[in-house]
Length: 219
Image (cartoon, rainbow, N blue to C red; front, side):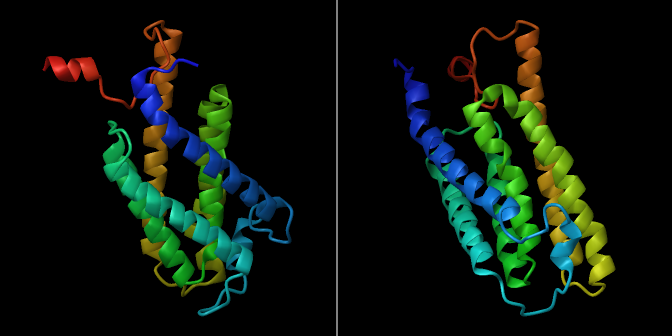
């Protein structure tokens, strides 16, 4: 396999993300569909019986540890190790928002919704890496359809119905809405790439987020 230098430089990053997303994806599927948790099929149930200081289940806590360590590493890697892209600033903001959500939702004992939010975002990642044609519909289905339907509905509406005095309601939902805007932003990048392919404007498959190196040198 003969890779161009820029593709070879990105190979470790891509391989690491594929491995981690696949493992996290598998663990997430296990928790969502092969345990007694009901918050995927019934997201409002995540708030039923909520109380301050309640114990976090060990398997959910393990998922939080994996997610937090990954996004902590990703924050550093995006800033200092990865190829700088047009959306790198947005990516850094995404990691900061996600780490804030993970930390605060765990601290205030809302781990089920935090876990569900991350799983819906992650479910499209291995699909896109293994089967690129599924990236666009996968991102739309998980991040722009199920995410608002299951996560935002439960946190914005159901949480107040079940726990009227739930703490930091506006703070959590503001962060979730920021993530939704980012999901729309990245989906538009994919739509732009697909449109260029259909119109014959793309001769080879390139990441549309990357800077035009030749154009940068000429300027």
